[in-house]
Image 1 (cartoon, each protein chain N blue to C red):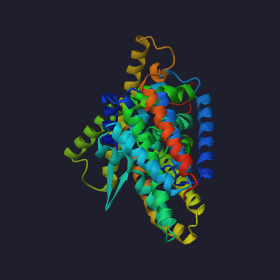
Image 2: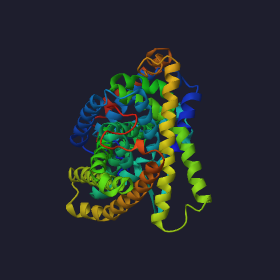
Image 3: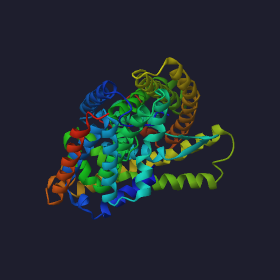
Image 4: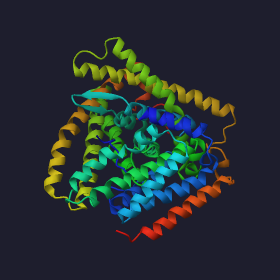
Length: 239
Length: 218
């Protein structure tokens, strides 16, 4: 999961397609509408159309296909539970149940794969309470560092015999190891706070301001929205 | 089990929309409660949120299955109900952005994770003088995990019941999920026991007492 996140983060910052150049706000609005459409789509034809459109978005965003498959297929595990529970002998019901989350997930992956996280979180942080908005930035910023440390910690535990013995001992030792990460998190927060003060922190992390700067690439997002909406209108009533 | 996040489109809108509304209301309340929080505390909250996401990638082998830790119990004890709920929301939102759980059900996922976590500190404070920090944190975590598990199962049950699924299928599902739920409680509690034992020796001021923990709003 974390590796997927790291790769998506890299692709979002390093990509050079028109989708990457479009403003975060236009992509956020488009992706939100797309996901809601997938969730409420009544017909299988519309869902198939949306799923195809989501793949087209991902491929034209030059997202690595393996990464896209891995990230977008995660909902399968959970959805299969519902497919089994709602099995009615037809193919339409499972197809609908599978296509909805897969389409929504693919649209979300396209959004984060083409938008660097400061641009993506900036509009969200403006509508969320301050501590939550700041939490988004600070959590994401700390994530990759802590992820590396956690992996190193677990490797050290294995090498030093922490992975052997009774389950109770192993889990308690793992807990003690993770406690060092809690302490590290606390000390890191002190350093980060001092750095923020030194850099003239105004009391709120707002992210960069160009998340809503429109450019020619936003026309592409508008065109995509138009095509998807037209398809939805035409296919809404088709079974 | 509680962080096997629910994707978009499998639950009816009558389930996820109220979940989103409740989560937003709880977020506002938690932000109000955390008004006096220092910037350092917000940064600490961010670090613990990142730790929650990092440990979710850790696999604890359970025979043919793998268990992924959440640490929401210890986070609940260390940050208190308001901070823990915010961490649950932020973690669910970041996971949803990479397709791990739906964007429309971020609220529901956050409520499932955060509700249990919010109970961890009251249980810890109640028991710490009698049992000591490790056992008290283990008990708080056990309750957090139990509550989150029950809520998760309730959400799934409602989602299944909203369709044509019969009680028979739901019963089968519950029979499969119940042992996993129990195992999850044991694993998270033992890990929490280790966490509290270490922190109590090295930085006891980070553990809450009657006056809260270090760096918290007074």
